[in-house]
Amino acid sequence: MLIDDDKQPTVGLEAFLRGAFGNTRSRSPERSGKADWHARSFVVLSLIQRFRVRDHALCGGDPVMSLVASEIWLYNIGRYAERTGCLRLSERLDDAERSAVVPRCNAYSIAQALGLPHETVRRKIAKLQSRGWVERSERGQLHVTRRWEEEVLSQLVAGTSSDICAAHAYLEPAPPF
Image (tube, rainbow, N blue to C red):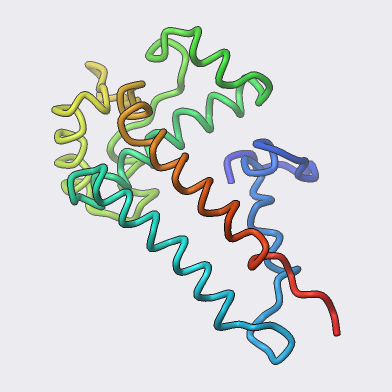
């Protein structure tokens, strides 16, 4: 959760920034006779697995590198949205010089967020830089480039969004008996 205050979560991106996406769990049926737990589990695991396979192919078989890039992007864009608001986010980011406007993070904070050794994160950042997917300032501050968004993120989002829409009916909470 990026925004930590007493306000109630709203809708859209702000709800995610406030952690509301995890609050729907109470509406979902647990493993019981009232819900087809195995069918729902199959759908959810299928979505996760399809994402992993897609991500694996796009990131050259390096899942840790993908985790690092994703965490940097989430920090950059999440903090930008938190500070400037969520309206017209893409429009504002597309018009801006990205390196000048997005809040940056460092390798240490990424290692802490992911629970990975700092040296592992440092090596993955070097790989990301060599691909042109991450830029590092002289002070070690990081941001993900538009190139990563175009080469990786756009394909992950397109495929995963499509999968989620197709699975939506199976993921709706079961009606009460």
